[in-house]
Length: 212
Image (cartoon, rainbow, N blue to C red; front, top):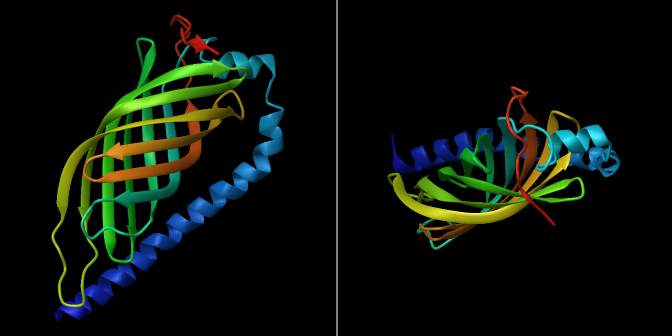
């Protein structure tokens, strides 16, 4: 098959991939805007006790996220990629251990990223803030030319970041992250999504976090 035919096929495949990502991005935005009044009123003592880092037992968390991934310093990757991902969080001592897998494609560029790290929680009223620190693995393919497709490349790095939770109910919250990656290149992932809090066993000690 001619190279330009493969490039055309890759672009067609990317268009089918990007459409559901854009749809999910738009739906999460609409849902968040619709829930904003409810979030602002979500200060009941029961919800505060369940979601506040300083009260109640901690539990495992599972969430979905989406948002723009801005990258600089990676050869052949110049676009803002629409990322979508999943995240698992497990309580570990006074922190949370988190593992995340994300992926995005646009304009012939394909980029996948996985990371593991720790989340450090803080508390202000009923809103939970947090800081992030961890390691990343990157796997990407640069934009093709008219006559050539390039192989996948990989790299490692680390990240730091911050974000917050907005409680919606006892088991569901909205999460917003700002994460900066260092190596390969430099990138910024601004994500938002929803997190489900699993039922805890009830025999754990309350989480001890810093109250601001």
